[in-house]
Image (cartoon, rainbow, N blue to C red; front, side):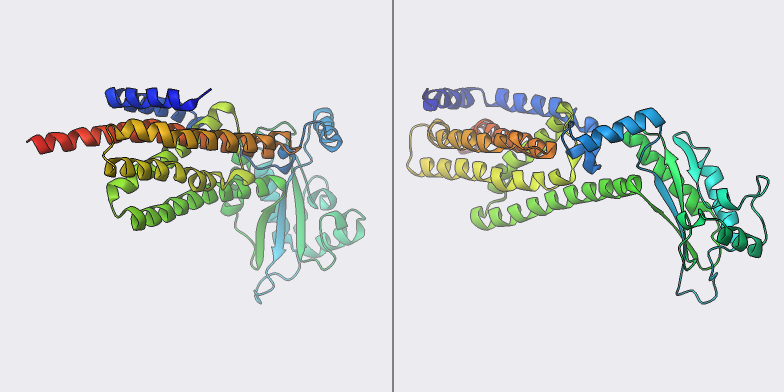
Length: 373
């Protein structure tokens, strides 16, 4: 199969119907953008592992049989050592009262199964003592208190046990609700309340992924713009050159949503990679077109698509095959990386040989009309 034959036909069609191809690009963009709302974020490291790992099977069985997850939210009360006027013993009655308030509110949340804390050790007839000395004695006498209070009485840890089959978004909402409860609680002097555990870490990872994707993508575009402007010295040429990576980035993001590929920490820099690889396509098209114009060939658009398109086509095929080899990796995120990169390169090629030549045809026609006028 000789791709030049088809590329030549494509170039002639773009010469004749440029607006049709542009309209097709716009329609395809709107279709793929519908996947934006379907993008999810994968923050749990266990989600990146194959489904047949024994430890994952054990975790699933535990969650299904006992109705709880091993990923609990930890509530930590810690004494601020720098506060000389604050509490110096975490067993203080004010700390216990604050802990009781927080856990009682957390226990009413939909996805919370139960709570486990030092309150279970010190309660008498279902009530928490209001006397600090009594609390200290109960904690010192109980062999279970070491599960909740450290040896120097400066840290107090409690567990908020959540549903084992909770959805990721529900878990994020639950963490936000507990954070809200903690922020509204009047903390005892010299005491800091913190949240810990896998669910809290996943929320932080999710926020970090969103920030990283936005920052790295923007930084990549800015760097590309600067280099292209130094090379072309014409804003119109710079815009045309970056069209492939702009559309490829948008289309790839939408495709991830439509295919159900989640955004993970491994994929957070994916769009910067697409920008770095795909920008070559637009540069090659424009550079070859300018050369054909200087040589005063009969139809520079057709010649550009026909000749440089062949090289870009072969580059796209070989690069895609290389990326798809990642599908053989054990980690699922590696396979996702290969799929996403493959779509990014294919989309860059399509925009380069379809949209840029069509826009160049329209630009030529407008220049010709201005000359006639």
